[in-house]
Length: 359
Image 1 (cartoon, rainbow, N blue to C red):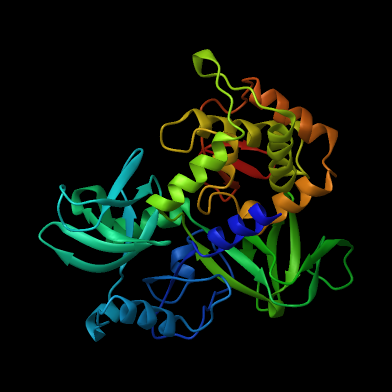
Image 2: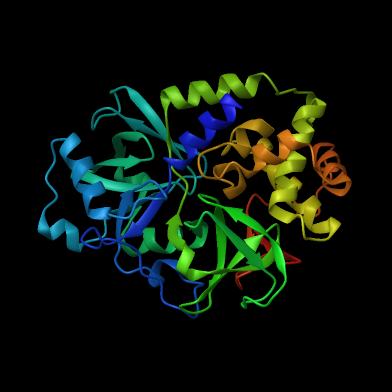
C-alpha cells in the first residue's frame, strides 16, 4: 500500500486545471459541456492540486519560487501550452539543445508558460520545469482546442460521503457511496443542483453542492519520476516476440481492476475495449511499455489517480467478466483496432461501444 499512496500522491500533484488566476475558484455553467474549456471562466493554465481553491495564490507561489513576476498582461492572456508531438518531447534545463534533459512531455500533455525566449518556452507541467522548443508546442487557440479534445472535467467529492444516484433526484435509487476526496469524471453539469458523473461506466448523479470541478490534461514527468516508474514497471513487465505480452496473474488482475473501474457497468465488449486500449498503449512508443506503467502514467486514468484501482485490486472483488476481458486483451484481442483513447461518448467521432467512444 506504500506504493499505492506514493502513486496517488504523485498523480494528484500532476493535475492541470484551466482557470483565471484572479479568480478564487471555478465556475461551470450548466448546459452543453462538450467544450470543457469554454465552460470554465478564464484561460490561464495553473498547476494545481485538485482540492486547491485559491488559484491566484498557487500561480503567485509558483512564480515566487522561480523568482518570476506574474504581470498584469500575462494574467489576461492564456498561458496554456500543449505538446505537439507523436511520442515524447525533451524538457531541458536551459534554452539549448546541448543542455541537460530534466524531464519529458508526452503526446497530449499540457503545461503552463513561465517564460519565452528566442524560439524556446520555459514551462511547468506537473513537477517538470524546463525549456522546450516552440516548434514542438501549441499555443493559444490551438492549445485550447487540443486540451478540450484530450482533457476531461473531473469532480472531487467534498462531503464526508456522497451518494451517487441513478437519477438526478434525492428520491432515486443509490448506485453507491463516494468518500471524501474521491475523484471521478464528469459527464455533464445538468444545473446548479446536479452533476452527472461516470460511475463504473454508468451515469451517476451527485449533488453539485458537495463537489468541486476541475479540468485536467496529462502532465509530464521529471527524469527522476521516469526512472522510478520504469524501475517499478520492470518488476512486472514480461516481453515475448512480435509485440505480444504476457503477464503474471497479479498484473492481469491490475488490468482487470482498471477495466472494472472504467467499464464495470458496460457490456463485455465495452470491458474488452478498455483492456485493448491499455494494451495498445503498451505497444505504442508514445506510452510506457508495460501495463503497470500505462495505468499509473501521469493523469492517464482517473480511477488510478483517485486510488480506486488500488483499493479494488487489494480487495480482490473483481468480476469474472473483467478478469476474462483483461486476459483476452493481454493475449492480443482487440475490438477497437489500435486505438489508444476512450472517454464518455460526447458526440466526437470514433468507435462507440455502450457509453464510451474510442478514438
